[in-house]
Image (tube, rainbow, N blue to C red; front, side, top):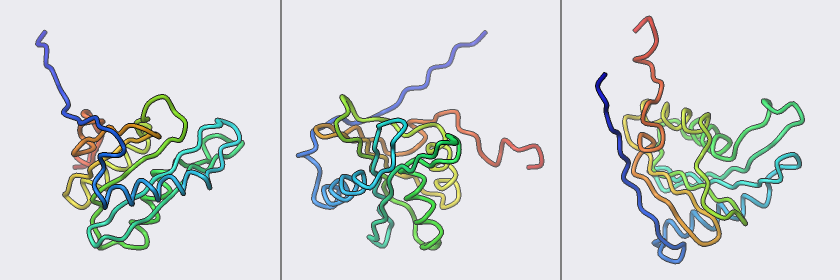
Length: 157
């Protein structure tokens, strides 16, 4: 058996250290979290997506009593962005969770959706995970989903 090691590189810093464009994304994700519909989890999340033309699209989680029918904030924002602006690249996804002890990572489904968008546009997406005080930042979805599933994993490719 051969052991392999995968490591990730990430940054941790205070929200106050965000530069001006990222601070705007943060504020928009904060505002979006207030429109979350999270009666079951009580875990509101806001997301802001920055496209390469500087367009910002936001989303919030939308739960449903039939649990798989809801959507996370990240996918709400990403799906809207790629549907309405199909020729614009996704540069940044910023996720905000109010009141959490630490910034939360996007779930596996959201990471898989982000990975597909990275593959589609052949460009890494920077991901910023935030709460009221802290930011964890990675330069690509690969850092959070190192064994991602892609079209090359399908049998007919």
